[in-house]
Image (cartoon, rainbow, N blue to C red):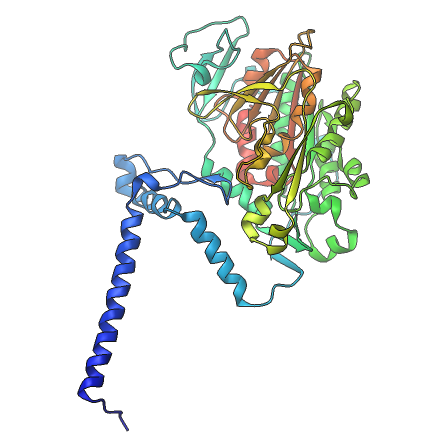
Length: 480
């Protein structure tokens, strides 16, 4: 039987419905108004450690194919005011869905390719014709700034005609930042094993990416033969070093030690620095962060010792350097997981200052110059950005000059963020160090190394990141 309402009850219900509609409309109106506030839209996500989408440039082509409106929509959603707080609130709400166990797997649905046996007959070391860059993104040929020794495109737009005896360097369009961010998320954040307040990145071998990376390093070694030594350092994920064999077997993924041996076995004319066993021998030490995907400076130090052995020089002990301590670091794993155990037990960063100098200069993507410190005091910084204590974080290019080393020695370091904690240990061995982050590079790196006539070209990369096809293709384009 249908329920009957009195006149007063119907009026009351009508008021409630009207009030509900008004509240809903008000919330939507406020949300729309906030979304239109251009001046409060964030440009970077501290939580996700990435640059957010930029408002797209209008072109007739993008307008007609619809991509312009797709990019506007992406910009609107990606840069919504108070974005990080809203995402954090959403993740906190999801925790209320049920009990969180001590261990969990996030993602882990990927599958790696089979790691083949080393086939030296397939190794190629023939340089490209005349060493010319072959990427379609190459835009122009510029020379170096004679005062600073950097590509003119990174120092002054008005010095394109400057000439030096070092040669010319081709400038290139910087890699797609969206693709690089996606690669980072895919390789290091989407396949995690969480245990006792620590997260571990699982690794999956990708044959095509491995082949492209190996060919790029081999080509660089061939073209630089007789001029510059080429070193390659592949850094394993924390899972391969810290987890037991039984845990790794249950979790799946690829064998990192076997993968690194394959990479190195297929290289020719390259001084490879295999640090896997060294890190494994120190697995009970604080060599990887618990809340972040990076290694600590202590982990990087053991890699530096192995590099020195390969190069034939003596490593400088940590206790000879000034140690800086930064407490409360909550890194990329915490940003992704918002794990309460991590929050209650954050990481501590220990950084070791170079002896000869702590000064450096870096250049932003817009070409602006910034004086900085090799080890910067990050006390008081946001807890998620404290890893930037090392060499200014991730910038297209940086230079460190050590006045205490007067033999004219120099090197170029091609890296992503794993290299940041490693580079400070190199400072006391070279007169000048050029640092290039391939993810933001505006120069053809092989051309740059040739033009500088450096003693050493050091490539240091995380094994998961170079397994991404976009990353491998980017490195290949910059080394051909």
